[in-house]
Image (tube, rainbow, N blue to C red; front, side, top):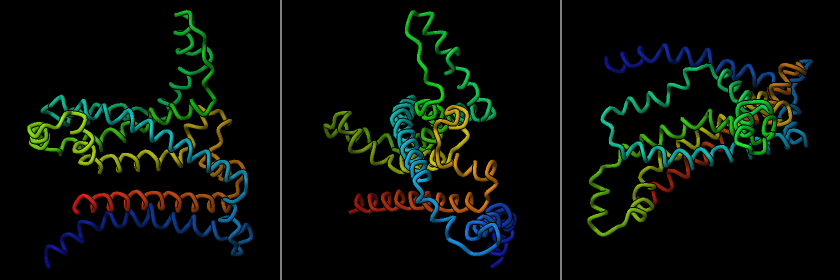
Length: 275
């Protein structure tokens, strides 16, 4: 009984923080979403997602988030596997290396990419010096995807690396002793045992990429209109908090549905392994 009271007491500051900074603002946004400018109840702000402009932005957001997630996964898994095979004793140093770039201001990092990718930027200067044709990638979908991959890649590497670190060397050695080659071991042992990290990495990349708007603002130059940009413009330019809140609620429900599907997929696959 005393331990339960102690645990409840220690959890109280976090519960208060969640209430003030998460639950109350969420209800505040929900109140705007189901009302109009006059305060009357309406579902127009929620059904507005069906408008062609909003559907196009949502579809583009899903496409960009999906491509970003796939690229991050393709790049992150080999990196995490190499780091794991290095057998570095101080694993905290590895985590530090990936967290270190995040200490720099997010806006500064994206603005740096804006300078690199501009027509007269570093990339084209290097290409010109090598006698190669220049590229005009800034303010395109490719630039937005590149910026998101750069920003979210650590969120894919870290969970995969943690999952790989939990795989016992005895399991890999046992597979080799039984005659399994490295490719067969990788496909049938390493990948399934690191699936939790893969699922976590996919969620940690796809969700923020889906709702992102700063990267597309800076590297897309207003030409790549994601659903996050539409919501941001409704709040800041149109001053239509009701419509912006309605679109935000729909986006949040879509994100929760995506996370639920990934979690159920992970549970079903784990259940299949147990069978």
